[in-house]
Image 1 (cartoon, helix red, strand yellow):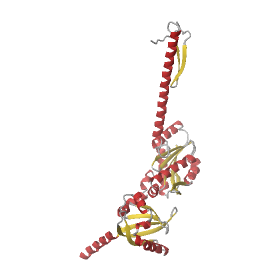
Image 2: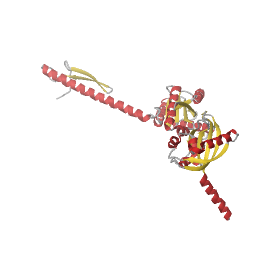
Image 3: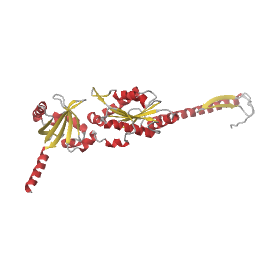
Image 4: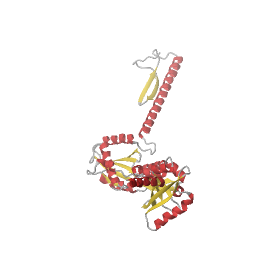
Length: 381
């Protein structure tokens, strides 16, 4: 039986221990005093057992606390880039501003220009590499005090404390212009970003409003050619995001026809993109299957006995000064069958790839049937 009292103890056995953040002192002696060594040993070992029990409990509490901190960290971090995710960034940004609401802050939003094109041309694994590379650029460029996050997709966010837009302007321009790259099959490819930023408290007095201002500035950059950096101004419209329709995904889904994009090179042509209508025409399930089946070469779409003649005709038209050409040939489908097509190609200069072909395909038989029916209907009238 264990008892307690407030009387003065005579030669007690003393134990000092810590439980959590609290320090405890345990003093033990028999109520009737020390009568023999047997009692002393019993008390000593009983107290030792209690100390070991409490120590074990303390260790368990510490482990549970570490586990809790680890889980909270995972819930706040983006799995791909290891930056804060949107939830974590918003929570930390709110705390930063509330901690010193009298200070100046600059919030920036940025994204990768034509990110879908990177995914479509090189595959999602390499799109992820581009995002990881961008996150590393951010960590290396901005001070450790900067709050960095990924909103999702290819959009990233930054919160810089104790600075104004004017003070940070040159640094943000420099970061935007700094080359961004990723590797694909041993080669390095570059990509560009667009960035918009706003200032607390001059542009906004709340965190959410501040981020909306930065978002508006970002899409002003998009409307004026991308690959740039712009500060928020009062005249910017918050609905600007809705005006952006000219991205590859929208074009490819809404153009009336099947088309591909490929590098115009006599010796080493490379297909970059094909829309869904073309994949359906050629019998491919998706873009990856198309790339694998054709080895990303335009000439592999042409029936073998026509390849040389078709390529010669294309380049003769180009070298004669024509930027638009029409070619009729048999298109090879995934299952090995062929369909007659008429293609219209347009060659343009690309800063990244040099000469690039945009080629629109028409099903020759379907087109003949359509116009034959149309002309017959006119004759009847």
